[in-house]
Length: 196
Image (cartoon, rainbow, N blue to C red; front, side, top):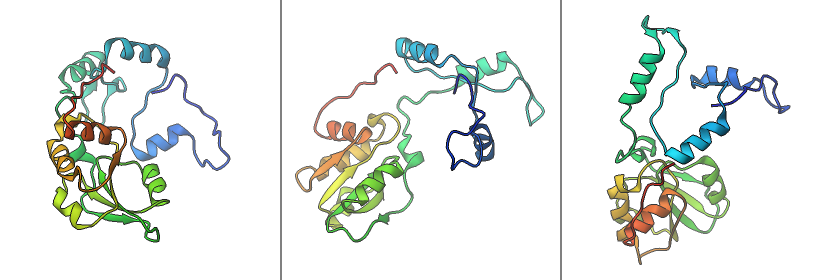
């Protein structure tokens, strides 16, 4: 979502502009949006479902008009109470880095590559699926457990909260973003969704 798409590349290493990259990767985008106004609106009214698209004939032969887009936005179920972590976590454990003396198990709730890169500079990181039981993590004998960032509502992942609760007092635990919220719930705190 941009006000005006940049048509010139701004980095000497770039091989294509943003529009070409989005098309190549099948990522939708929209321009001509007053992004400051949109940000203020979301800040003041909270997150809400939405839809955008190109008006006219769709690839499937149907016609896309404003009424159809408005209906799509109204029918969007939202993300409250939805386990988004299950959609983004790894399917199987994997190792990042191997020469560091410290061993950290990282729960993947939607972990970003940059976070892994930083952690692997300090420790051998074993990334595990979000649903991995605490007993399996403890069997790996880590020096610490990292609870990663990720999307969605921490109350929608009770399995992660329960595993974290079982790890408390057994091994040092640290985290960021969603991981902090999961840790808070495991310790008995409450979380609330902000409006944006």
